[in-house]
Image 1 (cartoon, rainbow, N blue to C red):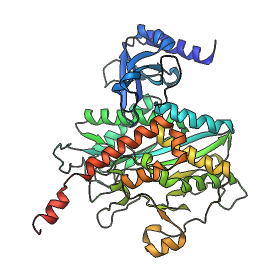
Image 2: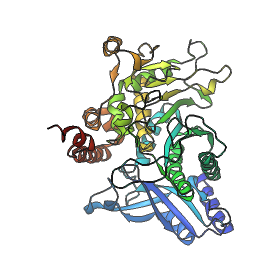
Image 3: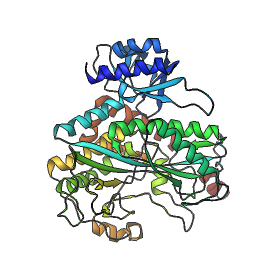
Image 4: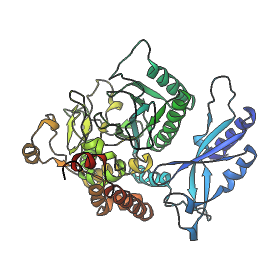
Length: 455
């Protein structure tokens, strides 16, 4: 019996033993929205064998009406029982799905398949790609629908702990729920802005981590509702507060060996690591439309916070050792911890599609490795404090200033087109151009307050 068959047998046996009544099959559309269909346990054997049919033309970015038949095939390796509130027995489980066409071939529109392809190309060179995200989000007392600013859940700040700490209670329940789903958590704490939280997931292979992030966003919103508040992964919901990012630590392994580590290098970085960083820098502007895919994403990157508050969103294409103002940071090496050698990509926000974002990070880094990109000198200063002239002299390019700039950089990129595949590439550009056109046509409160009294 193959490993997949054994996994399927385990799932079917567990459903019976735990008296599970609903099996939720999850997948994402091209924009990263979670989709779900629930089936009875009696239907799961057939779902493993043949998949569950659905109308692909009704899913954002999947198919035209004339070729809409698609199948969701559950991946038994992702099986988890969904926890219920205290006192209620669990009666639901979930699995992530791979999307196929009726003939069994993978769907080119499936973000999970996009990431699988990128990881397969790295695996052909003997590498496994690991990621470790630091996920930020806001808890809000309300969620206004009229465009007014929401009210944060608390008034705490970075690492704050108070005697009446409702945020701590929320994080404790969220972490317990995540770990009940097999998602390991490293840290959780209050972030800089009022209402802002951070939960860091323990590193895992990139496909498992993308699944974990989708589960994480669902769990956080569910736990928030149970606490009578709202959770949002919107990159920047407040004008004068820092936005929510998803700083992502990356590493390549060859078997059990960290391919980024070289004990003979001053920074303990191997040639592979240096070329990988160079690839991230070289292609940073091209991939930004995907790692920062919303109009609001650029308010986080190029907005500002209240005086004295820390802003950690990178805007300049450079790298540095333990330098939080750089786009790519190399964390301090801990003696005896060769496997912890890694690089940190700091531009991502927590509202991106993790499958597409991770696919482009591995593709950009591996391009640097395969073609032997040279790594430029690292940034030693606070990049934000330098003048424009100083940054130009050092060769620090800027990330795109808005979604339209990012799309222009993306549309000319062979690397992005090849990694995403023609279908996802074309749909993504088309969808995001439409989002920009809608935004560009809006008359904002800024314009009305500034111009209406004076003009």
